Length: 387
Image 1: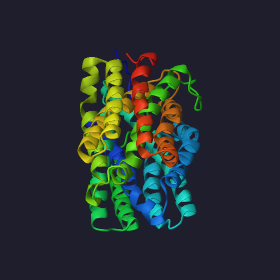
Image 2: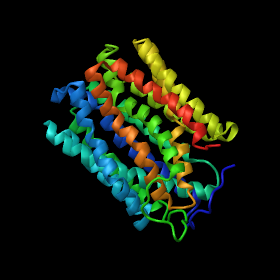
Image 3: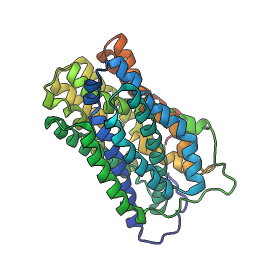
Image 4: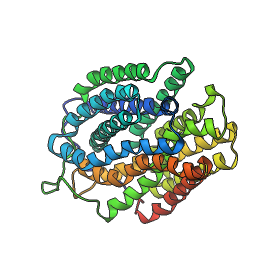
C-alpha cells in the first residue's frame, strides 16, 4: 500500500492549494505545447532537413539536463514556491525568443534558455504537487499531470488555428506568453508556502541510487515516446502520411486528448489494479499505438495509434514522480531532480535522435524503434519494484 508522510502546515483550505498547483501545471503545459505545435512551421521557415532539425532540438536537452542538479538544489534551498514563480516566468519570457530566431544559431541559443527554464519549472511544480499529495494522503499526482496534458491539447488546438490563419510564430508566442504571465500573477499567492517535510540530514545534492535509477529508466522509456509525439507527430503526418495542411495537427491533438483523459482516470485505475499492472499495460499501449502508425501509414489508423500512445504514456510519469517524491532519504525536490536526470533525458534527447535516425533511414523506421521503448516500460515495471 502507498504511504504518505505528513504534508506541510496549511494556511488555506487544501483544495485552494490543489487548484493553484493544477493551474501551474496547465500554464507550464500551455507554454511547451505552444512551441511544439509550431515546430513544423519553424522547420519550414529555416529550411531545415529532418536531420538538421534533430540536431537543433538537441539544444533543449542541453539546457535542461545542465540545469537539473541546480534546479534540485535551488528548490531544496529556497523552496518550490519561489522557484515555481521564477521558472514559469522565465519559461514564458523565453518563448517569444523562439519566434525572433531567424537563423539556426539564434534558435539554438533560444532553445537552450527555453530548456533551462523548462526544467526549473518542471522540478519546482512537481515538488509542489508532492506536497499537496502529502496533504491529501492519497494518489492525486496523475490528475495534476492531466492538467498539463489538457494544456497540451489546448496548445495544439490553438497552434492548428494559428497555422490555418497564417499567424507568424512570434505573434502566436507573444500571445501565449502574456496569458502564462497573467495566469502566474493570479496563481502565485495560492501556491503551497512550504514543501513536504524532509529528513534533517537529507542531502541537497545526490546522484540516483538503484531504486531511483530504475524509476528514472522507466520514465526515460516512456518520455522518449512522449517527446517523440510532441516534436514529430506533425512532421510525421505531413511527410509520411502526406496529410493535408489543415490535418497536420490532428495526430498531435489526438495524442494529447487521450493522454489528458488517461491521467484523469489514472489514479482510480492504479488504486484498483495496482502500479505494476498499470505500468505494464501502459507500455503495451505505447508499443501498439506506434506500431499501428508505422504499419498502416494513413491518417485514420495513425490517428488511432497516436490515441493509444497517449493513453499509454498517461500514467507512467505521474506514478514515477509520485514514488520519487516520497523518498525517505532526500528532499522531494532533490529526489525528483535525480529521477528527472535520467527520465527527462528521454523526453528531450529522443526527438533529436529521431531526426538523426530519420536522416539515415526514414521517419517510419525511427517510429518503429521508439515502439520498442513501450515494451521496455512493460519489462522494467517489475524490476523497479512498483507494487
